[in-house]
Image 1 (cartoon, rainbow, N blue to C red):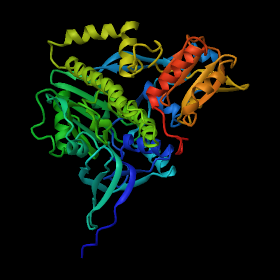
Image 2: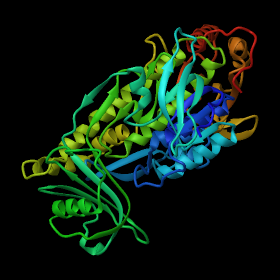
Image 3: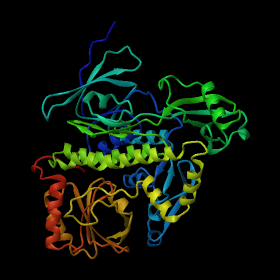
Image 4: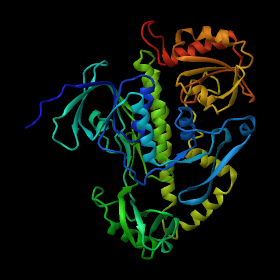
Length: 520
């Protein structure tokens, strides 16, 4: 007997997809008191051998939001850098560097571990997580203020579908996003030309398997032997795309492909995970359609070389959460949501281009060997390594700003060591509440003027006077919750400068009606 339909579940934001991007977005929205519901088809987190690298800007962002820890910033660390070896197009020699006050520029953290951390935080903060459910339909209402209605079914079957009614929906449901398709968001696509296979398996004879990244005339193998457990085995075949991308990969096909490309027999057994992928790329034309937004692979997908996809998605979530929360709490500036696509689409476009460039450089065959040899030499040049390292790690991202604003606007503020009321602290600690921060550097003479200037926004802007050992070209800084500078005044708090601050806040937030709670 079919059960009767249940009453609709209402929420402010429905997040479709509970991978690391969706769970982080839910945790951040819940931090701001937003009622958020995550709909995820998997009953539990899947530990699969996919992304496991957090690049510098992602780690720096998660440090500011409290999900990672870092070193205690000091004046000595402020003058130092940390470096870690990485690769570009499978070639060794790339070095990724970052400010020592931020910690290591590369953080190893499995995708499954991140998902569990973000989900635990989201639930603890009051988010609703519907695991074992999938969205089968999405319908947007008429008018700018209309809610979005989702049809949600239990993956196991048996129960009747339920309706989730949300003011906003975020599609974090992957490359084949139902949300993106339902609202008709189009995108720029690059057809696949390469096939790839991946497995988490046991190696019968580990000494026969070439470790790391290796190119032959037939393609590439990427093998990470497990010291005390399964090994991650992948192969890239450049003879054309998969005839049928959705055909399940078998252990026999994985072994045959890896052995053929390596040019030797590599016996495999006990597959824990098998998957196939390609170099298909897509970039959504917009990340927003009405009350529906996209994040992560739903907005951008590319060949997974360099571990950049997870990092893009996490930064999408960090960028979007505080803006959507402020919008939901009545701050009327159109910039809050319009800027999401403007700020996050360009880094995704650049990542798609650099992964396509890497794949071109990886094309097997003797015709490309001299090019790879030359590029390997170039990677050893400090300027080249720094340029590519900053690109891979997104440390060269600068957000678009108005031409009339300070040259500092849009830059990422390092985790400076600060002293506030005699106590040591840092930029990351002051940003932990997730509010905008007006940072007055110096003796505090401008603090009173600053408080008067931000009076219409005092519910969402903290004002802090701090001493800093670093010499900065501005005496007053408005820092966004994600660590980027929204405004800077090099006049140390002059009336003209603080009038410009009011103009900047008007553009960022608008002026809300007096009634209603703030974002705490």
